[in-house]
Length: 220
Image 1 (tube, rainbow, N blue to C red):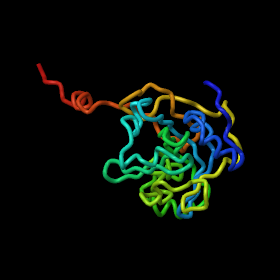
Image 2 (cartoon, rainbow, N blue to C red):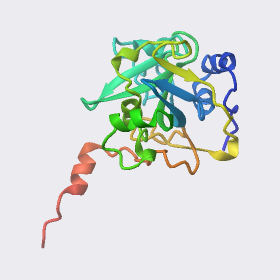
Image 3 (cartoon, rainbow, N blue to C red):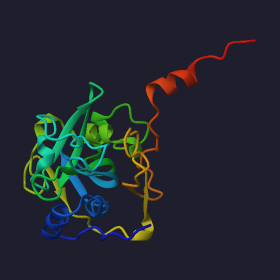
């Protein structure tokens, strides 16, 4: 795997990392701590998304809209979106203002506030399942639209802090992003190998193909 900088060990360096290119920023966020609603998670899985006209899988690929405006900066702020009519997902904005790149926080280990996370995620089968996947992570943290555009490096209700211990390169894997329709083979998903909180990989299957696969074969 291509080498990327290890997770930063102080807030100033974290800010510098987030102000740079999205792929190293995504790698560097592994092990970082995300806190909200009395719960803290250690980030174990992320995905990088580049800016306008650079990444067909990015929400900003076709330009700025009211929905994706937070992606255009500043770095270190939150881009939160609603999906499937029921789930919130949290991204950390990266790069210079106007570039519109961001890192989707896909999974994490609950390290404080376990009881609170359990109360929000009563359907979780285990503690490792509490924040496995971007929607579950937001549910465990209590993150919703109110976090949109917030500075994650400040002292607001949602806070991002550096890893207590850097995650070394041998402990990190990279591969395609989950369920994206464009640039589906780009290896911009990063995760801590062997961590039980990491979500399962699912390749995007077009609806028509999925329907055809599910259709019963006529008997002859």
